[in-house]
Image (cartoon, rainbow, N blue to C red; front, side, top):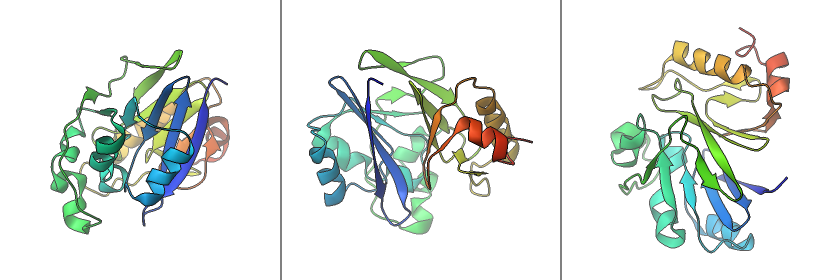
Length: 208
């Protein structure tokens, strides 16, 4: 494989934040909190700048560290049209209801759009639109990796009981993932990693 993948469990909500490196490019997938531990995590992997900050969705536990992360490491902030306002307003990110931390508004640089891949290393990162947990949830695909955010978990799926959640939409998104022919490593926003074929066999929400 032409990449290096590293993971940091981040913040009190135990968000899985990933560092993807290929060639001279580096990308962070989700950043709930940018603190000293995250800074050390990046620097210990030789990161001096980022090409992308990829956001699977706009909930506070995945985006509150984005402003500070970009201030230090740069990088284009990528989020879908459906969730872009979460970066600007904490009532959309739901931080207003939890007070997880301070949210500093930040603007998106690039839309995460299905059919508009992102150049990365010698290849590209594909975007799949997977709404349901939020209006604008997406998954990112790179080689054999599937960053599923809070759409798909080990033997489970994301919540749909919060504003913007839609159970039927999420089930359609899971059905879309189940149609992928490759046995991707599934890298969720919380909990252990799994594989797509394992979830097809064992996850009741993919087998519906």
